[in-house]
Image (cartoon, rainbow, N blue to C red):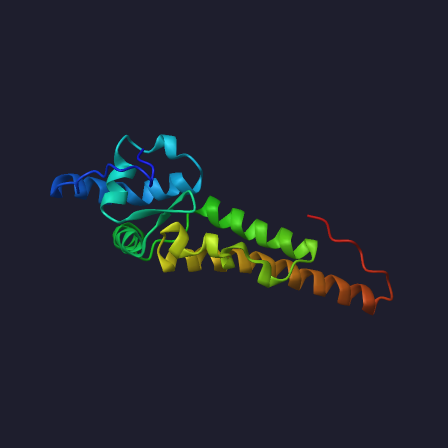
Length: 165
């Protein structure tokens, strides 16, 4: 992996290599996000930097606007109108519900964070929206259940039971 201060820059890859890199970009960005750069095939990072799809910022590799477009195009081919996988959806709903049970507001949705936005992750806007909405659904459901529980207890003149998750 070439460091940004290296004097040597690799030449831009040819069309065949570029298509291979295009197909692997989203997976590579996911690996970078998970701090698993060692799992990216040899030479890919140097080629992504040479193509201006990734850039070094503050010692970290970041997706460039051009790289984001490439990811969006690739994601658009594979994710168009595809729903989240049920386990991922269920996990995000569970996380939202736990946040509500802790007393966190809907504004604490981790999808609202810049580091989890489509520009940072390279995922499509549609996929990001699905994730954000799944988290909010869990938060809203837990919040509604807590309100109902409190109203029922208040109507009976009881103390509000603690909600555990």
